[in-house]
Length: 302
Image (cartoon, rainbow, N blue to C red):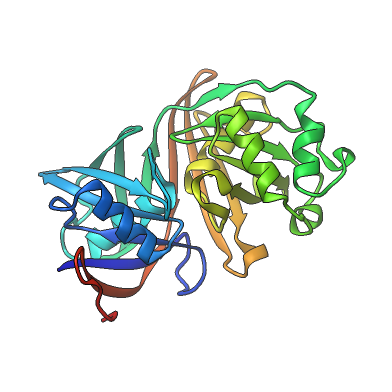
């Protein structure tokens, strides 16, 4: 039997944030087994630890329909689960080997209790998009192109997974989106990205966001850690986020439209104008646990 946990990431409130499946002992599972368990759990992503050697863990991520290179909220969920299981005390970093590269984790604690997991995401990468794509992206979200913010970056970016970032004028427009999922899937596949990430300013360094990824089986992702890091890197690159000394910080609020609000904190480290590290952090809470057999299916949660 394989033990698994269902964990809400980027929140400390059960039922909020973004749900992830976490499997700490996945080394004996085949790829089809992992895909089957991810589909059974039904979370946007499930993370499997396939090997652990000291401070290094090899992990794989699956949506309900396919394997992906990286997932931010599942990484935060995994870090908290390891800490609560007594397998990581946070006194030294933990390193995850993912398909997107090695991801260091650090743990914030309060009176010895795990509080917040921070992950250093892969180095940011960017792709410019043709201006003509603005209208297509807006219409796929059910809005007019005049509702797109012209002073914030519209581009593709990645800190592990590629997304298209579409800025909107305000969060009211964001909340009222009526996404055409087949059209979004066709657009994201044509652009070679995982999702369409719409965002709107709420302050100098605060943003609201919604993320649509039907091409990988996720109609709307509740809270997206990997994309939040890429967004802040993109904003710094284009001079749209304040930099103090060698740091820039920001917060993304996501999930409100789905009734599952969450909060992603991002800290960027710079050398001159170059971003040398992207740190994404958040809280998490374990909601339920269960057992699964590749032959027998799921046992009742415990």
